Figure 1 (cartoon, rainbow, N blue to C red):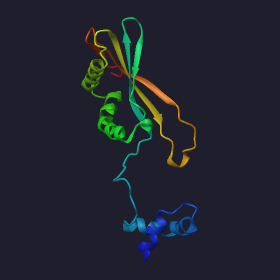
Figure 2 (figure 1 turned 180 degrees about the vertical axis):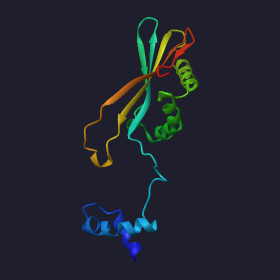
Figure 3 (figure 1 turned 60 degrees about the vertical axis):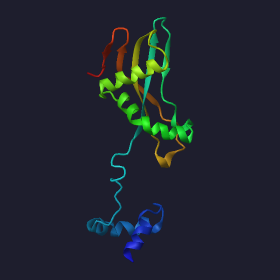
Figure 4 (figure 1 turned 30 degrees about the horizontal axis):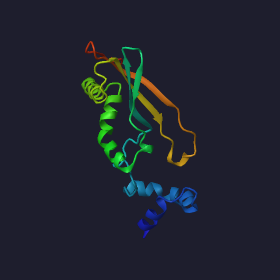
Length: 165
């Protein structure tokens, strides 16, 4: 009976009088007995920010093009499923200490996909990050976006420069 009581009120609203006054008095016994809910198995290190790559292509005529993945909030359900497939690649490419060859392969893929091979003289990879608003504070203004250069590649010279090493 005590366990049913605990399950009902452990996850109740913090303003609930039972949760607010009674649970703290018996909580130490439940922790000692190992009867509390630990979510570390499901989310041991919850993300505090969104991270994605931004790639800037500079051409021989001093013009440039920017590539970044479509915002997940604007995607259709099918594209969201496909995004999950690429998410790990995007994360590796945007990490400052990520694998150099992964960055090079990703750049080669984009150069080929958009037919930039002949005219591109420089490619810069940036990490773009934005703090995630708390679930309980969704009404807060959109957090600031930060950008950091993590990798530079010169296709005509086949020369790369990892700016963090």
